[in-house]
Image 1 (spheres, rainbow over the protein chains, first blue to last red):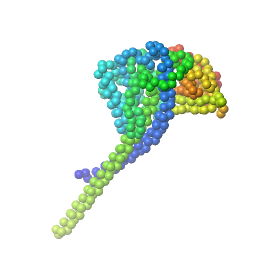
Image 2: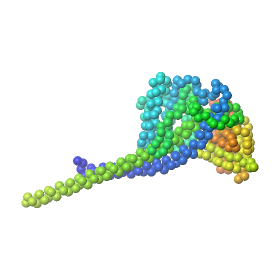
Image 3: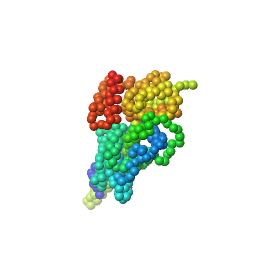
Image 4: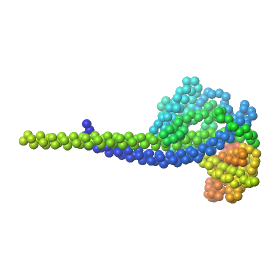
Length: 290
Length: 130
């Protein structure tokens, strides 16, 4: 059994850990509110962008000559995966959930005998992936300096992806991120951005648009922007998810620390009393023997 | 009947501006300036660097944009852009910064014709603001 002194020290250390996790929870809660707000504010842009592209791709008459970003290169040999994670840890299962999802996708691709290339955004993802897929990672980007997700950073990633696409480094591009549902639920997502998956929802309004200049030119101007927009959306969702995940993880940690303190205190009190009783018995039996 | 329509400017971070009482908007479309009035035909076009003029009852406003897409449908004008500044808030130093950036870009030799053209446009527009 641990001595009284040891117990005292452990209680003190658990208490100070609890203080830290509590503070982190508060900070995460404050950041979460901001991140959630900006995720919501960013939604109209990507929605409108999607709408316009849907309208445009419906209007395109000759599908054969559609821009490659929309229709693909016609083959599916090389896959590029952009795995977006956070730069900081202590956020529960946030990063491992994305990695798990990504890894199962990687395994599928490699099983099919296709080539795999990985870009990691955020240092945590890179740390976890480089052990197994180190030779597949072609680029590692991290935005440690930027406080919040901003469009400028997303645009950098987007431009890089497009550059690689134009020189034919890959055929299909998928991004991995966590979609923010609520504080306790984040859903890891795999979203294909090249070629664009416009199937599924057909726009109901069969309204004809006037295009100026023609559809092809607008599309080829718009699609690269859409890539950046999608990446930006993923970044916003990710940062909200990260804070949400951290908040609930820290909440749990604080609660666990509290339980631990209670348990240790009881143990401490018990052994203190045992010590007192022992001393008393010693004194009494000593007095009796006289 | 009123001759007003709705305009919404969105940038990636947020809804930048929503206005209900607009009578005319002039946008720097890629093939020249384009004025949009109520009941314009549905149109999609994209922007080159320039000035968006919004004319409304509550006063006229001018915005500087570097790129973007306009969509007009059912008397709703949506402008999607990644860089937009209200001219009223833009001071000289900000203007100079942007101008410097644009000039640097325009002087690069390793860019294609279209980016070169866009950069030149930026320089031109920013110069006229001074």
